[in-house]
Image: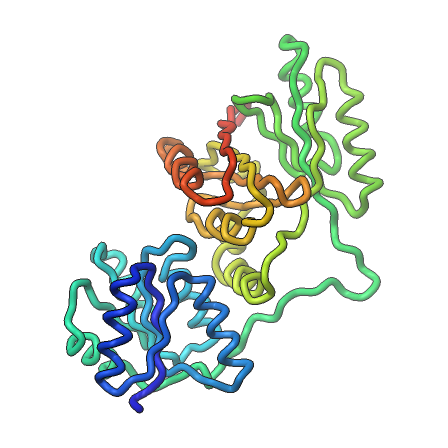
Amino acid sequence: MKGRVLIIDDEAEIRRNLTVGLKQEGYSPVACPDGISAIHELNNARSEGIAYDYLITDIFMPDIDGLKILKVIKSRYPELPVLIITGFGDVSLQTTALSEHNTGYLDKPFEIPDLVQALEELSAGSTAEEGAVPALETPAEGIRESVSAYLTVKITDPDRSMPIYKALLAMKGIQSCDAVRGDVDIIILAKASSEEEIKAIFDRVAGLEGLEVLSQSRVERPQLDRDVGEFIKIYSDIIKRPAETTPGKQPGMMSYIIVDIDKEAIQQIFTTVFFIDEVVFCDVIEDGTKLVGMVMGQSGMGSAPRIVEKLNQIDGVLRVREAKIVKLEE
């Protein structure tokens, strides 16, 4: 046997053709239809002492694109040979893919001999050669995790809009405060060390004249499989989190998205939202029945409507609303 190959591609015909072709060439292939199933397969194989010698992945898939999978896989298995395949590539994608160590690139369509040649041009390696895996952070003993919650507000006295907004910005415990266009006027994210402190913040907000508090929702941990949660944590640490700043301070931010979901489908929906490049963060609220995310665009045009359209096509998404951020002051 020339080696075990993990294939990730959302097209059934391609998975079938690659599986049959690689078997005929002496490889042992396993094919997965999306990133989540591939994550499970890698972790299950590791727990059983089985190593993969190659990874072949498409770039554009419904949940996690191949370049993001590549980043996390390379952080864990730096020597694993990876071949990126795509029918919609360009020079930029190819350059990004090839910037990773021991990674190849192949445009679709191709023949099996082309695939085998591309694999053989990569250096030997496997998932048995695990690198320095980023440790999952756990709260130190005796230290409680912080509590975050969203508060939505309606301005009942328009003449006091700016004084109210400035008072909220200056209020201790409020991490971000954004004026928006939509069903509400202001979305607030509060952070504190306890539920009691969060309640105190909300009481101070409700005590301001000229506004009505419409909703209060604590941020919850998403209910994800351990493998997927670990993958997201590693991706956050090595890619997403270093690029983030305080939510309300990022340049180019334009919209919140509020997604009503079937909580049984939370893993698929949360993962899809989390891995959209323009989504800066994604939080779970209301017992797993809603997601709140923030969308960033270069010029503020196009990103949110495209994301709303994409989310509306996912099974389990019940409704998607956009709340555009209004800049009241620089």
